[in-house]
Length: 157
Image 1 (cartoon, rainbow, N blue to C red):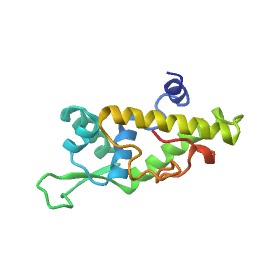
Image 2: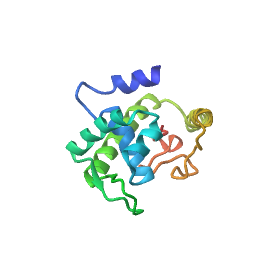
Image 3: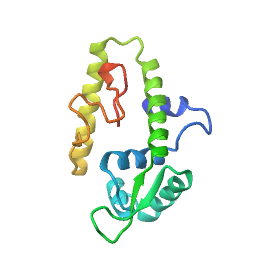
Image 4: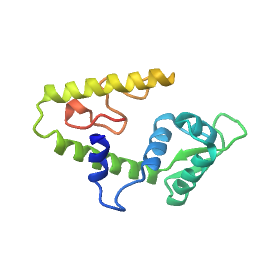
């Protein structure tokens, strides 16, 4: 609960990206183009819910509809350059906030936190029947957005 509180308290009202936008854009960045149905399945949400969230991404210019690169009939969503920039800025804000919290921790303590959070993420995904870390997460825990918990950055969730 404190992790969530820290995240919320670290932002002023109206600052930053909506949580749903952050999650959807991260998934599109990592997995590549996806249909609304695939996104709904990935997050275990109703397609109408995801459709509303995607509409906001499209209006903001953070995502775009494209023909299915694999030749399927459904159109897919792809993160735009603008969306990638917004996502990187949001990640940077999150990392700076965590760096403030962890400023007095030594490298070993940061690594221990990273290891425990990684183990927790694996357990959650195992219960959900999914593999973690996903192939897009590097061995050291860093994501394509950069920075790992043990390098002074924050573990991605």
